[in-house]
Length: 164
Image (cartoon, rainbow, N blue to C red; front, side, top):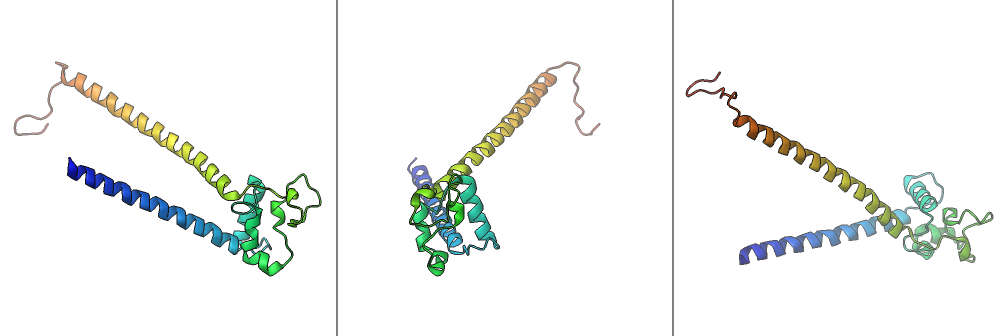
């Protein structure tokens, strides 16, 4: 009993360590993509960030002030965030940080994680449904096999030393 407990606790620790490592890698990757943003909308990271910010109504990783730490913000020196951070109801929004009320206040990281969790729930429910159907099929096959083996009309195809 003690050995099983030690083994399972080590497994849990390894699994938790793996979760924290993956979370750290995801955060690092998100920061890297934001740092690769160039504002021209010609490369994949820039298009992806603009698309996510427009579709999810968010700005930055945690909020719009995250843009201050990016290479694009420092190189452009215009004290603004991408126009994709602008709320659509504001017609003349330029992304300037002097008017933060024109910008989305919520960061994108939490919204992306929420969206991914929703998608994963659909995947999990689909997998569980498929597994349930498979188990039901196996149960039906076992019932048919058990009933068939007690049927007097059923005779074995295998005799003592030969196959039929």
